[in-house]
Length: 431
Image: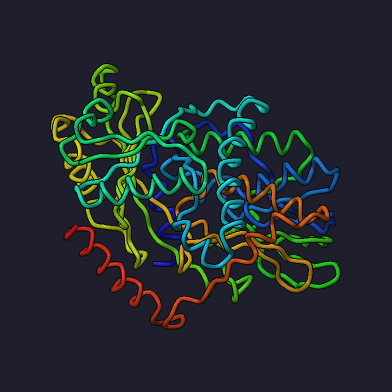
């Protein structure tokens, strides 16, 4: 089944779609027009860039092939966490320690930016402070504590250490050994947040068009974008469609892979019962390479993610399999049904570092958030807007990160990745 068809099927049982009201429908593009900046992709990165560019007084037009927030922006786990998807040593090895410190600081700016935008644009998206990173074994607990020690020593970022003896104060689960807590990170309803940014962009004067797929891009001094019913001539183009660019930039497509990720949401619980599971109401991730992540919702459900598919095939009996993962962490929820189960595709890079840069012909791109983009997408939009406005210093720190194509070419890279991830799953199981 083609990626988009699979993805549409995965949206049908989304808790987010069921609990976020789409108050505005943005019309498809019809006819020919022009603008200063044309953005391809109506997710968090594209919308964030649009808001920042309008603050510079630029004429901005955004094209979304489906609906605003259709992709990962509107279907993710809702967790906004410090850092990148890759470890800091990946960044240090490429950029050096000074620039790695700047990248870390910008990842914290990304968290603050979410709070600022929620307040400025009055976005009701159920923001909740707090993040727990939990280890499942003693060995992983030691590694996590050593990581936290270095982050505090080298990057000046303090994290609360949670020892085995104090873990029950933070989470009522037999699965975990120890952990860390970060009050600056947190979680929200991602589709509500994305739709709120779209309203803010439209109010600022951004021209938004849904159901408008870009069928061709002609780079140049004034790039030209073609759609089914019109064209757009722009001074600059931003590609922010990730795995949904549908061949517009083949060189970029070779550096990212679509990875299916899946989430379930329980029936509503008694508030006290949910509070007893995670007293701080924090978002939670384990430290496995193929990780589980979960959080409470504002309406007292447990939202639980964890399965991934590197073949783009949806797991069989998704709701049942996700419920079993939830029960592995919280066996006391054996009487609680799962009411929603859905998924989507994120774009990962080989090294899990984000991939930002430029293509010839006045084209910028943002991709490769690797499942860690809820906060970073907002920062990315700010950085690319700075670059388009003439100050590329911060954007170019990220643009210096190098990325390789996935091995195996178009036919073999998916099987190669499936085999590689099988090894990481085995490593997680063996501790």
